[in-house]
Amino acid sequence: MSGSAISNEDKTSAERSSSKSSAERSSSEFVAAILLRLGGAFMLLAFAAALLPTSWMAWSHARLGLGELPASPLVEYLTRSVSLLYGIHGGLYLVVASDVRRYAGVLKYLAAMNIVFGAAMVAIDLRAGLPWFWTLAEGPPVLAFGVLLLVLLRSFK
Image (cartoon, rainbow, N blue to C red; front, side, top):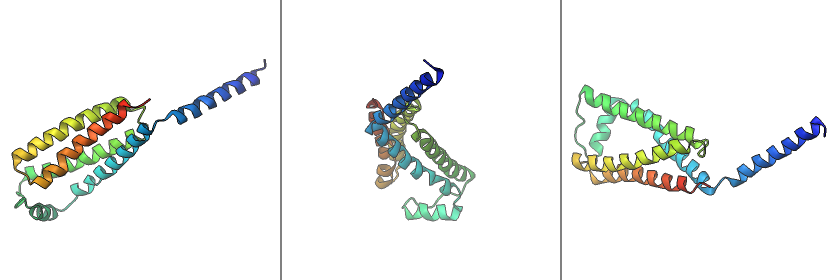
């Protein structure tokens, strides 16, 4: 057999393997990637919140029925740093959405941490006396996101 015949056979085998792996991609991988992209894009919006003028934050705080936003360096620091952390988290989701099978280990960690974080946020919100709509809109969706992601990860073929 000539060298070119072997390389053609190897090429054909590699092409079949490549198309097979594309065909084997499960719908759960597709759904997980979409979920991560949507969640990531939503969380990226938090970068804008970190840049809001303090007066806008105070207005929003009052409109949500939370009273007057305390004017202190700690409140300023926490509101902006939490927004930045959410934005960074969203960027990470977009990165891992590019290849959910490759990043499955990282995704399992993120899913588990979302479950813990979501439950913790419900407890914190209740203890802090936040309005019911805030509590329902924060912790439960994060927890559900983590559970859904874990379920999808377990169904990868």
